[in-house]
Image 1 (cartoon, rainbow, N blue to C red):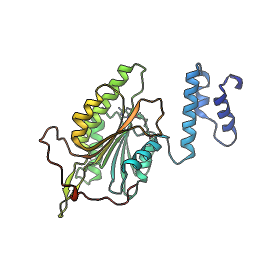
Image 2: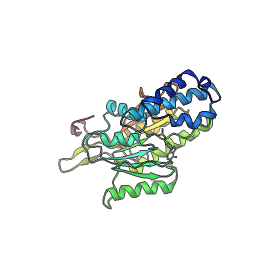
Image 3: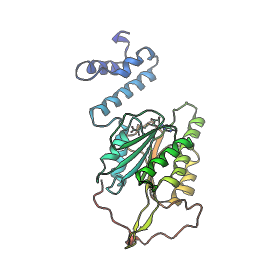
Length: 279
Ligand SMILES: C[S@@+](CC[C@H](N)C(=O)[O-])C[C@H]1O[C@@H](n2cnc3c(N)ncnc32)[C@H](O)[C@@H]1O
């Protein structure tokens, strides 16, 4: 392929990369498959994202989404120690989670794809929808607690299934992941409780969950999320692509599987522990 056959933005990326940056591997790999304007645009975007991420400390630009959410909703506090990262590869959310203030953080990262090791991150390669993978996550929580099963302070899911292009199929796949992450919180996320001798209220853990717009979601938010969490927000960080239908639920203060039980009155506000040193 001669350079004149490349679209202009792609061409300038190639020229730039020949001097100070590594050759754009993704570009070389796909050079024979650039057939349409949209696939060329996709390649330019992927390549730019790759360059943005590789210039910084993170493995992917998704890192900036979590940084934004964490800053806005004060998620990665010093008290947030045990974190489950679902759909973790290549690992930028795990990297951000480990950097949160307070140190001593442990991340259990799960993905269908292999992921290069990160110190402090326990990697599980498998399908989150598979019971075997979920059993492996529970096993890690058992090990982290020296035989006493711990519950996570934060369950975060950036999982997204491969888009088929068929809206109904894609929505169904995303909806299935959404429900499974919520179900997993019942066994994996710390529930709010009165703590220690002074009986200080310790709020329950946080769930961050990516989801793609689907018809059931408004009802699910009302009947499930808002009943089981003290605070529920929906956000689309600046770092998300404008054209993407993705957004994130940030749900704080897990109250447990209260859909099975009577709803308890909330703890008196003055007893809530104030956390210092938020991100
Ligand atoms: C947007 S990427 C995650 C990027 C990651 N948060 C980061 O910052 O590096 C979505 C990931 O979800 C994973 N994924 C999708 N469905 C999954 C499933 N059922 N089980 C485990 N991982 C899944 C994909 O393999 C993909 O790596």
